[in-house]
Image (spheres, rainbow, N blue to C red):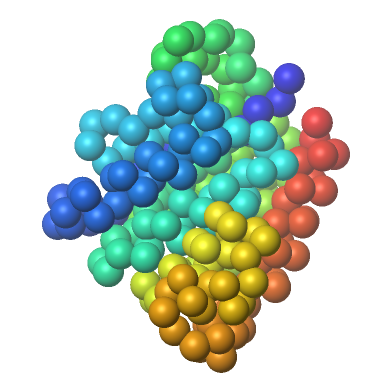
Length: 203
């Protein structure tokens, strides 16, 4: 069975009050699975999450936007697509190619100074997905906290309308519309569709 493992760490966490992001990140992960079994936040600012391969880019966007809602915070995210050969009661003790790819990918981006990586069993597919992420990063790396907040709400609450979002964030509907356009959210949704298609073919 093919799974996805997301491993990451928060950039500049030591300079920011953890109450601003830790409870929100835990709440997000709790919506995806059980604590310790399917996800874990450890060593203060590192995390690991197991998810479905088809959801990996959408979940990437959710984590990225949640963190970047906070001024001066960012996140490194490494995605590994592969198998799970050993199941443990804690996700950080599980083994398999998905875990290996994800962990090694995080080490790579720390050395390179990048913020994302993805590895699959197919080298050609990995190159294609990395190139796609590099183009997408031209958008999400320039998100302001205000843009990230809107993206997070749209990713986390897929059925929310612009009017509902405007009321929730206490801004005008036109302001929401402008932020969605500036973030190229339609293009991000197309990118998610591209990832889902590739993951379906991999499985």
